[in-house]
Length: 390
Image 1 (tube, rainbow, N blue to C red):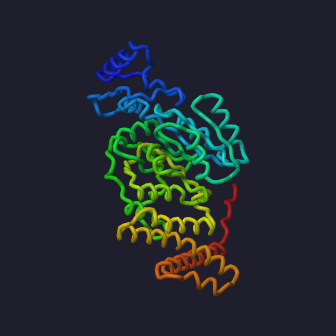
Image 2: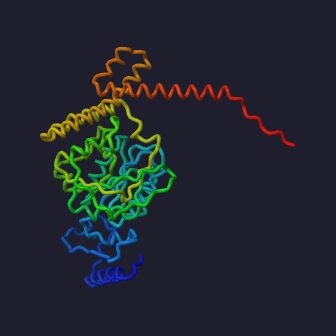
């Protein structure tokens, strides 16, 4: 690793000063396990380069406080993820702040566990747990119990991080319990845009704003429940905050909402390097009526965490209605397939749900009609004939 100009001189002086005390610089100790890492309040190493343009991810990492305060445990719940796990783990280990990577094989039937154990054999920072399939929430809870670092980061097994992501978040994490960057959403195999880690974080996120940012069925402006924040372990432990293991859908949303209700300081920054791979067959697009029912019930429980303001109550009701819209749509489709007219009519239980269902029915009718028209046009069109060869 090389630095030029005044930046190189600054880092060289700091390294020499640490070497005279016969101690390895903190930011070169990323292979040490948390149990062997000193938790004393050493002074922080800071690098303040005069040139702001064109910083490399390594330079950005050098600016961060390289003490035990930024040591991070990365939790990866993996289910049949053999095609993408290597990329995810490699991207986590490439972050200098990563001192623990805990991979939980959630009952995979492919080579996921073998790949995970191969990583553990190569790098002492990696540990592997295995369990019967219980969902991502239960897997992350197991990883939380098995790690000790002061910060916790979630990485889905089919996603990955760009270099310097954690350093960028830690630049603004001092006043946060949770800090997340907006996701870089891409389809597999497409180009990834460069993040802008120098942009400042927004004002702390409120519970009301978070709830309104998760109205998928009612065309909300954002999808904040998909964020993957850095989380301060002391806050999680102080409130016994863990994922609800019974949730297979919305487990991130529910935990973040509960944290905000409990007073978490939650910051959001522009994209800093979390690459979210969009796939048609992901768990977030395939869920059952029971999944939706459990998520809706969690909204009811959230109202009892603390007394909510009127605005928070309105936002919570809107989110519960959004979930109920998706639930009633699935019930309606099932009733129509079985010609159960009373069950179909019972799904139109409120004006908001009725409007949503009517819009979906019109959408499906239009799509089916357009498909029939295209089919008739293609059937009436004469087949193309190949040119005769001379």
